[in-house]
Image (cartoon, rainbow, N blue to C red; front, side, top):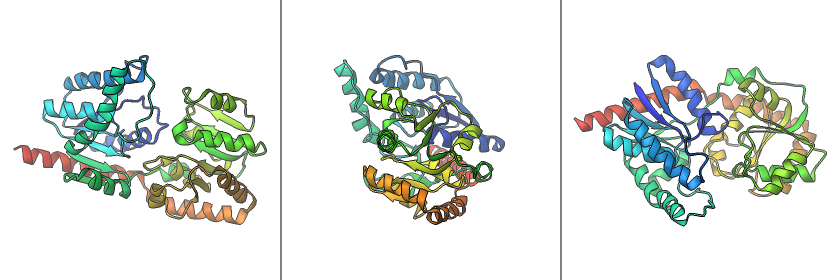
Length: 359
């Protein structure tokens, strides 16, 4: 099967959507699945409103020149699903999208001198987004809450597959490290939407705590936070690490922290569990749906309680060890090989269903 993939970001592997696709695609290579990826960013130097519209048009015309059986949108954002929808209509091919969250509702504030471009961008998110989702030939959900959301918000009646997400458990277990150098760790994009401001505030007020951040720093963060981040001696930042280096670094910490306030799954929590780390996170419904009672939940924005829980886990070795053991055992069930097979089976089902209706 030849699959056209549209990915508006460079595939660095540091976001959950990117990592999920990269890992699944590796496991499908032996099953006669060929991915044709559109991921260049030729308009990135322009203002974001112009870049988004430019990418949609560029991806559309690029996709028209390729031969494929099905279109796959692993990012699940407007920048890949809109050109996918347009290509599918011209080429008469089905398209599938991954549903991480309501993409048109989490659209961030954009500052642009061109009000017309901003209006067009908002129109795409608010009006066209839901229409495209409803016109897809199949949707892959990564959590049960997302599936319920699709049915409730969009009255979606086509094929839906609850596939989920997973990790390479055996690979990650080899990095467990009992020689700890840091109190806390974080893995992922170092940006506002992942709660990095809360991390900066916590470690600014508690200079005796240490933390290692592994990921790519968003240079567009507020200048005062970027300045603080660079000045704090108790926070170490590592960018551009390989997977082996990244997991080795995270394993040197005692606790994994993730103060994000918006997630679809959060693969970094699962990876940290496999590394043998207790987790402290904000109380998001999606986390309880996936990780149940195996992590420490804190009310959103309560950095005081978040800090108190860090100190409690550092001081209470018995409690910390309990979360560690339970997490290592629990996370085994999210197996990447099984997830990849489920994803492929769903793609084949959507393709066959489309062909049967067409002919």
